[in-house]
Length: 433
Image (cartoon, rainbow, N blue to C red; front, top):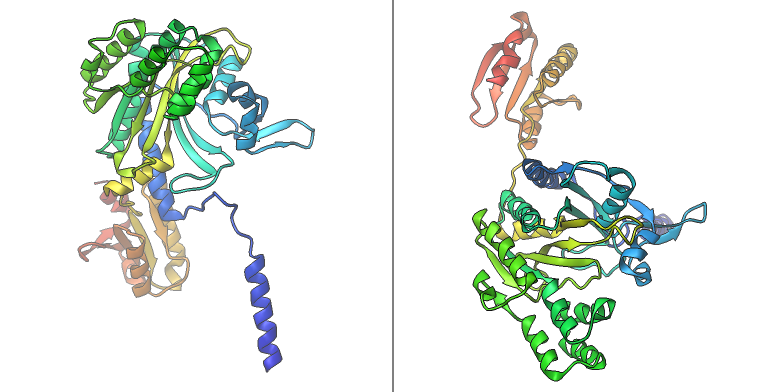
């Protein structure tokens, strides 16, 4: 007996250690979670369609070169990159903007402009998982390819804000900046083009000592360095631009005026929004959900230029990406709930003799576009009704031999418990009422 117990213990320990687990930084989603996720995904997509955007889809894996051209060779350390069986350098996409521009240059350049596109999908980054951040994560995004006008940028920011409002999120903040202001100041101090990029990247992260050291190395005066650092701390209503001149300040002012006219009052100018990547060229913006604390950013974007990097002609493009997982976390933090609707009808055959008729009825309902389920576990009536309640079914359709004698079924309201006899040929019309 002792040997039997020991053997069972060893087997149990072996399988507990060798049970295949999901990869770190990924998640499984059960039926209830997927109902919530699909609900909010559909909200985002529907809002984009209302704004005249059209959906596209791109592959989950791409040639690694697509992202090294965009972000530099160092990005390989941050992504899932590998060789396929043909020896080609492939990676799981870490974001979608590069894929969209690759798609545009290869297949969509002849479409009329502005070209307004949106997408939803998985992305992958090899980084340390933390609250609300995973190695496999989901993004909703949109891009517009057209002309460099304030109207174009305002349309993109407006879509992002409208999507967040449509989900039910109340507490969010839009911060708009323009990378041109800092570029203009750096150029006046003698730092232009790619030489300004490392400084902008440090300013974007608010790493001021490192940014100041780089500016000193670039030969900038202490006054110029001080002015640039102070500009990144400028934030407030649109009126803070009143004392600032130049094309970039004028441009932001126009973008903000349009957004205010669209009804987005939770808007501020933040000249510290830099998004220090080389391809950002003009307007930049971020959206925060303050209730998330330090990791509060849920959306970011701006106008950019990637087409030349990928071998195409220069085109104006602007877009954004919403972190879907962090947005759901923000909604949860605010207490926004979604109650899955459940099926409309749950068919309960009372006995074996009427099971075939039950499948006839459930198929009739489904063909009529009415969500319906049926007992396939051969439970009794009581347990079937209990299961129907767990599925949040609105009605149960009880089929017994007595009902069939009059070509009828018993329709039970699962909330009130009220029951009525309904003719079989009137059942669909009854539900559609």
